[in-house]
Length: 208
View 1 (cartoon, rainbow, N blue to C red):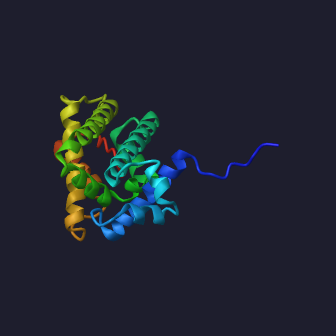
View 2 (view 1 turned 45 degrees about the horizontal axis):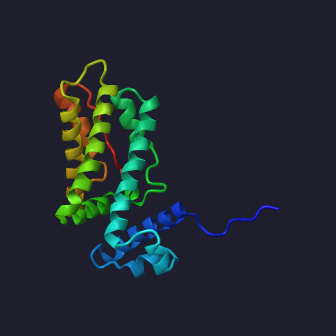
View 3 (view 1 turned 30 degrees about the vertical axis):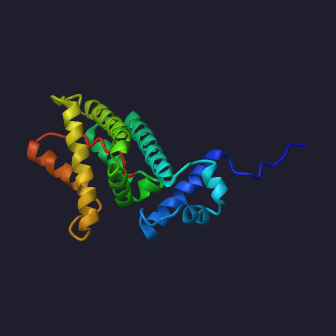
């Protein structure tokens, strides 16, 4: 007779820590959050935390990495069946994001974490690596969804669109009353009208 597994796997433990960290960060702030708070919110011991991460900063970087990987996979899956800009944007707006991705559900926390990590110069190359991955996928989406009217420089178009999305997230963090949650999508729609041609957003978050 096979044994029933009762202890969580390493992946399950990490997912619990990601979820609890997001909750603690939003409630107490990233700087004030402690490892003890995060472990307690996850129903785990400090030992369980340290068996996965050496520091809070290491946990935060892992959360960003997990978020980017999930976002890339989500966008690739959508791109398989949605080949035009309008179709892709509609599918992206309607899709469920962040089911197992706390940063996908909390884009403002995502921006706060990026700013927190960016303050440490030694961590910036890790952020740059993830930014390059987002830009590469965004450029692929631009190419795939504008085959009828190709974009001259997909990489630069992707960079502009991601900067636009991140900028709206920052604006929403500063002034949510004047920056609706769908500001990025609305801006892309206005750009389509101004340029007289479709633009693929290449959105890699939604997020999360």
